[in-house]
Amino acid sequence: METIEKNTCQKVGYFQKPHGIKGALSMIFEPQYDISLEEEPVLFVEIDGLLVPYFFSEEGIRFKTAESALIHLDWVEDEEQARKLSGHSVYLKNDDVIVPEEELTVHHLIGFQLQDPEIGQIGLIERVEDYGGNLLFQVQYQNKEVLVPFNEELLLDLNETKRTITIQCPEGIFDLE
Image (cartoon, rainbow, N blue to C red; front, side):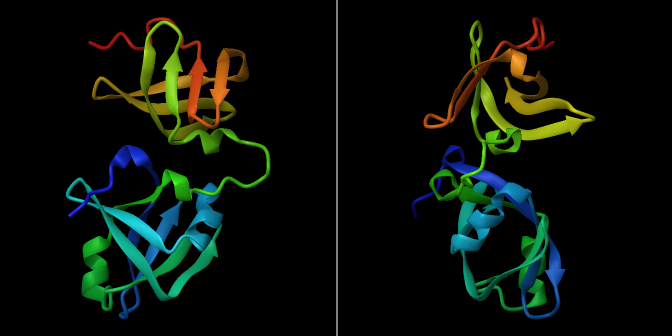
């Protein structure tokens, strides 16, 4: 069986809980992925560290809010099967993510490779946190979660094709003990 590499996918959300008794799942997702979820017939669910493909059933997806939806998947036909997927992360392949024609926002940088001119590659941006206008990129660096502050003055290069962003990181931020 061929597996999907996690670095070729982006985490878009997670299954919160079953909805009803016919296998529907309530999904929480990042709002920038709504178009991608609507257009893509397959999701990848992280189970035991592997990404397992699940296809939408005929009922598909029904959006409840800008960040939640009811999902119906093939082969998930009752509440018990849906409960087994509750809490699991949901991914889409990078190639299947649709970036709207609008201007690129910082939340579209999730999945980009963060780089520093001195350190080189740091890690993939997993989340973008906004604390009252202070933006932080969450990355894994040497197996530790690091929050990297970001503002436009720190930006050195942004390559949408290669999905990389190079910023001048604050000195000492990666001195992990």
